[in-house]
Length: 169
Image 1 (tube, one colour):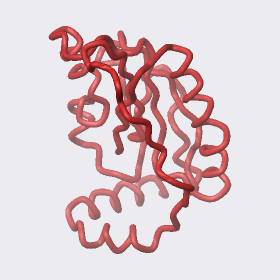
Image 2: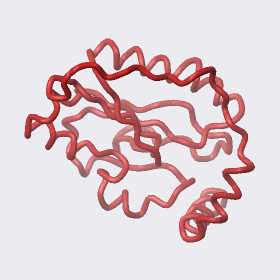
Image 3: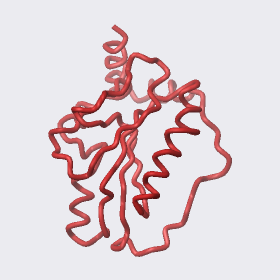
Image 4: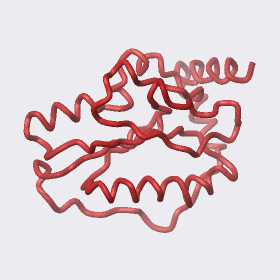
């Protein structure tokens, strides 16, 4: 019953954005010191770009994100760039992903990034991209910030990625 309630709530909040604004105002925030910013200093046409999404994107044959835990799921899924479009799935009850279910590029613009590579706008697309679930709270937030996010950052760095596009759900 909880998942159905979450999906109905997500649809209602999509249709009535003022309700969403009120909910967001009441949501505890994670405070970080400073802005994690690094100036981009190379030509885009030479850059390797990765996507990290918090839209709950995963491959159909991967374990879906845990939607039974009300504080979220701080794990991640590796998303190879060469995955056929019909092998992607979205498991996330906290936003209405009806349109994203029809076109994954709305929340995970892998085909658009491949087009930019083919057109010579960017150097290349990272071989591996990453899917997270948004809506992480409580102790899971600490796990995300101190374990899984740094783990993914290390993997991205080891692949020689120059920039990351972060897409929310």
